[in-house]
Image (cartoon, rainbow, N blue to C red; front, side, top):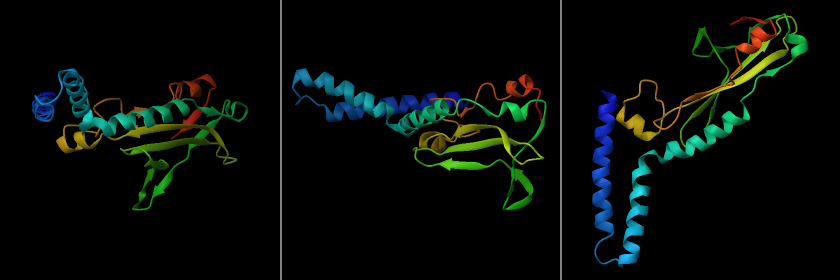
Length: 176
């Protein structure tokens, strides 16, 4: 149902953009420039509602590419039981959460979750990786059609592909 709703919104926006372009680029424009300006203006106006997601995608992709691996101290991790580092929620002492950092340099919020597995005997970080989540832009929030506020244009989460297989590979037990 939300797909139909989105399709209707896109068709309405297409109609509005077509009217705006025709209004701005009228018969007074020279014939050689008219088509070029119409196409350019049409493309710019069509992507305008999702521009914040387009810009955020570049930042999100950069973060994902830079943090696409698991950091592991193999010597201290092999055949051990490690504990996931968590912190208490200041609003609710019974609730334990991941260390989270909100990156505000993008147009939409990007949330960085740090997964750090420590040796319970030494409290040293032995395995660490980051998971990034991104919220949708203003259009998806205004329409209210996404259950988890995902962007329209790309996947909302990235993480190292080997984040679980590394534990099996080195016979590491986890207590989450």
